[in-house]
Image (cartoon, rainbow, N blue to C red; front, side):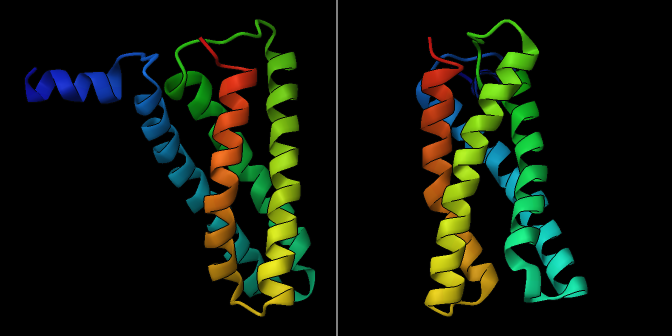
Length: 143
Protein backbone atom coordinates (compact mmCIF):
# COMPACT_ATOMS: atom_id res chain seq x y z
CA UNK A 1 0.00 0.00 0.00
CA UNK A 2 1.49 3.31 -1.10
CA UNK A 3 1.49 6.55 0.83
CA UNK A 4 -1.35 7.97 -1.30
CA UNK A 5 -3.48 4.87 -0.69
CA UNK A 6 -2.80 5.07 3.04
CA UNK A 7 -3.72 8.76 3.11
CA UNK A 8 -6.91 8.06 1.15
CA UNK A 9 -7.83 5.28 3.58
CA UNK A 10 -7.16 7.41 6.64
CA UNK A 11 -8.64 10.67 5.42
CA UNK A 12 -10.85 10.45 2.36
CA UNK A 13 -12.68 7.14 2.09
CA UNK A 14 -15.47 6.10 4.45
CA UNK A 15 -14.20 3.47 6.87
CA UNK A 16 -15.75 0.91 9.18
CA UNK A 17 -12.36 0.15 10.75
CA UNK A 18 -12.59 1.01 14.44
CA UNK A 19 -9.06 2.40 14.83
CA UNK A 20 -9.53 4.69 11.82
CA UNK A 21 -12.84 5.93 13.23
CA UNK A 22 -11.19 6.48 16.61
CA UNK A 23 -8.36 8.40 14.95
CA UNK A 24 -10.82 10.53 13.00
CA UNK A 25 -12.89 11.09 16.14
CA UNK A 26 -9.69 12.21 17.85
CA UNK A 27 -9.08 14.75 15.07
CA UNK A 28 -12.68 15.95 15.14
CA UNK A 29 -12.54 16.02 18.92
CA UNK A 30 -9.38 18.11 18.67
CA UNK A 31 -11.15 20.66 16.50
CA UNK A 32 -14.17 20.63 18.81
CA UNK A 33 -11.82 20.97 21.79
CA UNK A 34 -10.24 24.07 20.23
CA UNK A 35 -13.68 25.59 19.63
CA UNK A 36 -14.89 24.59 23.11
CA UNK A 37 -11.78 25.67 25.01
CA UNK A 38 -11.26 28.79 22.93
CA UNK A 39 -14.80 29.91 23.65
CA UNK A 40 -14.41 28.95 27.33
CA UNK A 41 -11.26 31.04 27.58
CA UNK A 42 -12.86 33.95 25.72
CA UNK A 43 -15.93 33.98 27.95
CA UNK A 44 -13.95 33.47 31.16
CA UNK A 45 -11.28 36.05 30.39
CA UNK A 46 -13.74 38.70 29.21
CA UNK A 47 -16.66 38.07 31.58
CA UNK A 48 -14.89 36.57 34.61
CA UNK A 49 -14.63 33.22 36.38
CA UNK A 50 -17.72 33.89 38.47
CA UNK A 51 -19.87 31.95 36.01
CA UNK A 52 -17.30 29.32 35.02
CA UNK A 53 -19.80 26.46 34.96
CA UNK A 54 -22.16 28.46 32.72
CA UNK A 55 -19.29 29.32 30.36
CA UNK A 56 -18.33 25.62 30.40
CA UNK A 57 -21.85 24.64 29.32
CA UNK A 58 -22.03 27.21 26.53
CA UNK A 59 -18.63 26.31 25.15
CA UNK A 60 -19.40 22.60 25.43
CA UNK A 61 -22.54 23.13 23.31
CA UNK A 62 -20.48 24.76 20.57
CA UNK A 63 -18.08 21.83 20.62
CA UNK A 64 -21.02 19.41 20.46
CA UNK A 65 -22.24 20.90 17.18
CA UNK A 66 -18.75 20.67 15.68
CA UNK A 67 -18.43 17.03 16.75
CA UNK A 68 -21.85 16.14 15.31
CA UNK A 69 -20.99 17.59 11.93
CA UNK A 70 -17.67 15.75 11.81
CA UNK A 71 -19.31 12.51 12.99
CA UNK A 72 -21.96 12.38 10.29
CA UNK A 73 -19.75 13.65 7.48
CA UNK A 74 -16.37 12.04 8.16
CA UNK A 75 -15.83 9.90 11.26
CA UNK A 76 -18.45 7.16 11.04
CA UNK A 77 -19.40 5.29 7.88
CA UNK A 78 -22.85 4.12 9.01
CA UNK A 79 -25.83 5.89 10.47
CA UNK A 80 -28.36 3.74 12.29
CA UNK A 81 -30.97 6.45 12.76
CA UNK A 82 -32.43 7.66 9.49
CA UNK A 83 -34.28 10.72 10.77
CA UNK A 84 -31.80 13.53 11.39
CA UNK A 85 -33.87 15.13 14.13
CA UNK A 86 -33.98 11.88 16.10
CA UNK A 87 -30.30 11.23 15.40
CA UNK A 88 -29.33 14.66 16.64
CA UNK A 89 -31.57 14.28 19.70
CA UNK A 90 -29.78 11.05 20.68
CA UNK A 91 -26.43 12.64 19.82
CA UNK A 92 -27.34 15.63 21.99
CA UNK A 93 -28.48 13.34 24.84
CA UNK A 94 -25.09 11.64 24.76
CA UNK A 95 -23.57 15.12 24.67
CA UNK A 96 -25.63 16.21 27.67
CA UNK A 97 -24.42 13.20 29.62
CA UNK A 98 -20.91 14.18 28.54
CA UNK A 99 -21.67 17.73 29.64
CA UNK A 100 -22.77 16.48 33.06
CA UNK A 101 -19.51 14.55 33.33
CA UNK A 102 -17.64 17.65 32.14
CA UNK A 103 -19.36 19.83 34.73
CA UNK A 104 -18.65 17.29 37.47
CA UNK A 105 -14.99 16.94 36.61
CA UNK A 106 -14.52 20.70 36.12
CA UNK A 107 -16.02 21.24 39.56
CA UNK A 108 -13.79 18.54 41.10
CA UNK A 109 -10.57 19.62 39.39
CA UNK A 110 -10.98 23.42 39.29
CA UNK A 111 -13.09 24.15 42.36
CA UNK A 112 -12.33 21.35 44.80
CA UNK A 113 -8.71 20.60 43.87
CA UNK A 114 -7.86 24.17 42.85
CA UNK A 115 -6.33 23.38 39.47
CA UNK A 116 -6.08 26.17 36.90
CA UNK A 117 -9.32 25.99 34.91
CA UNK A 118 -7.63 25.27 31.55
CA UNK A 119 -5.61 22.41 33.04
CA UNK A 120 -8.84 21.10 34.57
CA UNK A 121 -10.42 21.35 31.12
CA UNK A 122 -7.67 19.29 29.47
CA UNK A 123 -7.91 16.50 32.06
CA UNK A 124 -11.70 16.53 31.86
CA UNK A 125 -11.66 16.41 28.06
CA UNK A 126 -9.53 13.27 27.98
CA UNK A 127 -11.90 11.46 30.33
CA UNK A 128 -15.08 12.54 28.56
CA UNK A 129 -13.60 11.86 25.09
CA UNK A 130 -13.65 8.10 25.60
CA UNK A 131 -17.16 8.13 27.07
CA UNK A 132 -18.50 10.11 24.11
CA UNK A 133 -16.84 7.96 21.43
CA UNK A 134 -18.04 4.69 22.96
CA UNK A 135 -21.61 5.91 23.49
CA UNK A 136 -21.92 7.38 19.99
CA UNK A 137 -20.38 4.34 18.31
CA UNK A 138 -22.64 1.91 20.18
CA UNK A 139 -25.89 3.87 19.98
CA UNK A 140 -25.73 5.72 16.66
CA UNK A 141 -22.97 4.52 14.36
CA UNK A 142 -22.41 0.81 14.98
CA UNK A 143 -21.85 -1.64 12.17
